Image 1: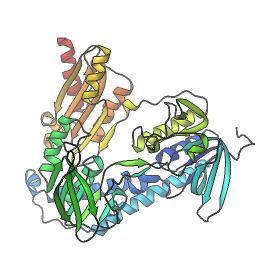
Image 2 (image 1 turned 60 degrees about the vertical axis):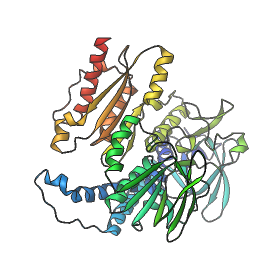
Image 3 (image 1 turned 45 degrees about the horizontal axis):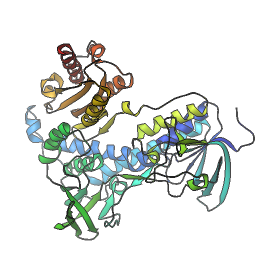
Image 4 (image 1 turned 30 degrees about the horizontal axis):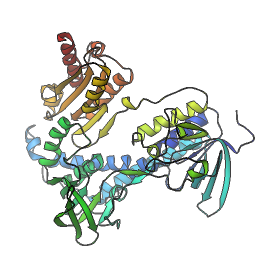
Length: 481
């Protein structure tokens, strides 16, 4: 199958989840594949993102659970004061990262992928430059090239990073120390997850959000109940509508807060540390995309549904991009899906990605998850398409399993079409919300109606009955229209 005029059938630049899945899938399909990585195999997710952060959340979550004497007393359990070792919690995360990174590397090697360590760039059509770690620079050729270089934390102007007292999530996952008082700039999923970790381990948190409400990217109804439990009931002082216009590292760290609208300084804080959790930006600067005439959109590589890189709306031959660098849905599982879809299209199949059916989760205690449309988006869609939007709420307080766990403060919000019952989206806050959302994601992917979904039998007693009840409530609305 290999084309002898090229060094490789496919070169993948970047070995995060998007690049990994693309390279492995392509090699298993018989292509001669090379993958280039300038840092650590596994990319952001494995080394600086979802994997180590979930290890920290798992450990700190145990601490939170054991320290919640009131909750345990409800079961008739009385616990001694909780002791933990910060270094061993950090070691747990580091060990997990090492294991998964090694497993990914071995999986690529078993699949026959050539692993090249160094920095990759484009050198024109079907040509990839590689600067190896030893400084040697060479140019390789490939019939097709996939760019999967991921993203890096965004640091706003005025904030100085020193990696010790002012840092991003890249450094936070190392848990090198526990500041008594830490300010977290941003209340998206990264800020929320680290606030969960730090408060469980005894730190005071100030959460700073530039937009007009805390948790602005979440469904408002879900944000309201989640904020009550994840922020207001904990040692967190949350402020919205203020901008951290200046952050100076040191002991203490000095923060200048300004009103977002007037830009007037409204407060100055002195804290022990600052975590900057203000989102991520694409890692596309040194790819030499201009050699092919590709124009970036705020740093993101424009692609179509087949993962083909675009110039003025037209695909560039033999050039593809996947993952965070495309800016579509900056999630590891999105990147993985994009990677396999790109390879299938390279091989001649026609596959288009369905972003609406890709779920997202925030691994706080309890969790938050979502899939499909937000309510405002769904209402606009309903107006344009001429149908009435249906919404129902299903509460964990009516669920036997949640009650047995004494974790019944939760909510599922389901969005659907009232004309045919098609599920448009769902948003969940509550125990194991990250697992529950997959059932709804599958329904969105298949464009299923609540009519057929309401007839599916769910195990009793399980949390999945929260979803079942939502489907049945939705059918009742259909019957009334």
